[in-house]
Amino acid sequence: MANKLYVGGIPYTTTDDSLKQHFSQAGTVTSSTIITDKMSGRSRGFGFIEMSTDEEAQKAVEMFNGKDFEGRTLTVNEARPMSDRPPRRGGPSRGGWNG
Image (cartoon, rainbow, N blue to C red):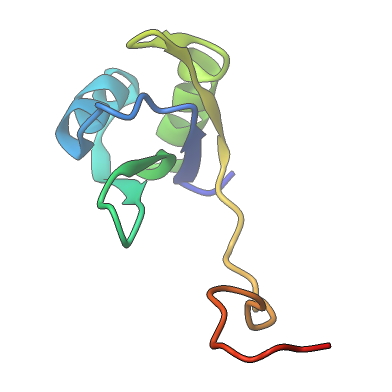
């Protein structure tokens, strides 16, 4: 198992520091990042935790996956590497009619 974990179901009021503190119960947390919306700055409800060892990452998954954290149930599993994605389509209209 890799030592970088995906964490879903994070309450919108949770901070990077409180998430890091919670996961430190499983071992040494080397980084904690909650993903935020670029426009509003609001949490998107998921993030990533990096543990110092694979063993600590496995322990964190066992301790926290499916468990309550600040009123929400966490999903914790190994983070998948970012894959190349096709360009996004759609978005705001630039005027005109595409008929």
